[in-house]
Structure formats: C-alpha cells, structure tokens
Image 1: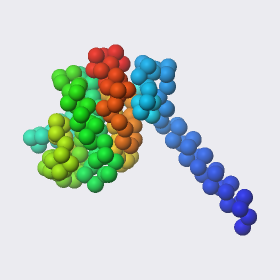
Image 2: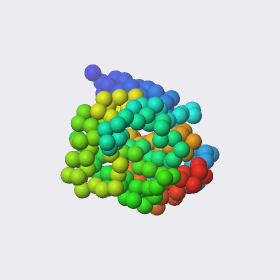
Image 3: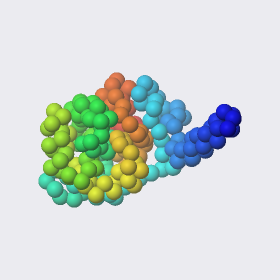
Length: 193
C-alpha cells in the first residue's frame, strides 16, 4: 500500500476528532470576563460553550453525609476531580492544597473530590500518604460525577463563580498556585468574574 494512501485516512480521522472536540469545548478567549486573567498556565483553560450551572450531583463530605454539589453555590470554587491511582492528580495536589491555604475561606474553596470507590476513608488515607494537608474531604464513590462532568478523564477541574456558574474547565494538571492562578481566583472570590 502506498505511504500516501495510509497517511490520508489517519489525517482525516485526526481532523474529524479535532473538529468534534471543538464542538463541545471553546478555548478561553480574551473577549470574556476571564480575558484579563488568561495568562501563563491559565491561558490553557477552556470555557463552556453555553452557560452551565453547577450540577446537583450528590457527593459525600468528611463526616459521610451526602451533599448536593449545587448546595455549595454562593462561594467561588475550584472543583477538582481526582483519584488515588491518577499520577497527574497526585502531581497537582500540593498546588491545590497551597491554593486552599492561600485563599480558602467562606468565599472560596478548593473542592477536591475523590472519585474512586473507596470514598472518604480512601481520600483521607491517600492525602495523608501524599502528605497533603488543608483540603476538605469530599468523595463520590459512585464515580458518577467524573463520568458525567469529565467523561471519566482525570484530573478535571471546574472553576465556579459565586453565582454557581461554571466559568472555565481544564482536563489535566495545572499550576493552580502560580501568580496567574492566584490573580484569577482572587478576582473570582471578589465577584469580579
């Protein structure tokens, strides 16, 4: 088979995949309220194609009681979906904990949700093993939130305003405690975004 006949179908499949991806996620652009904050690592964020409210998925909090994710509305958040077996999740966890230590209060929280079957107990043990402190314990042992919001891909992070709307999202690890991220989250916390 000629080399050209082999390359053309591969190229066509890649282009179709790229076009399909672009139909669902719009890259962050400067013509949004986030625009001035899309620098450095934060320039990699993607925006929802249309306004997206915080979901009503049920997660477990530290004491084991259920909580609808939408009940957290009213505070700015970085919601992060992670699992103990996920190496990129582990890589970004210190930055998430540091962001919580720097900005966490009644107006802002890093909501790191373990989406593995082990639930809260597993989240507690894993964060202790990874030497991570300062994050609240949340879990979804059904993994439904990861499947519905992230197609099962981890880590996935959602940036949510006080209005309960998803402002941006990212699949993969980022430097969440870098200067560009701090600027973005201070503005989010202050209701400027």
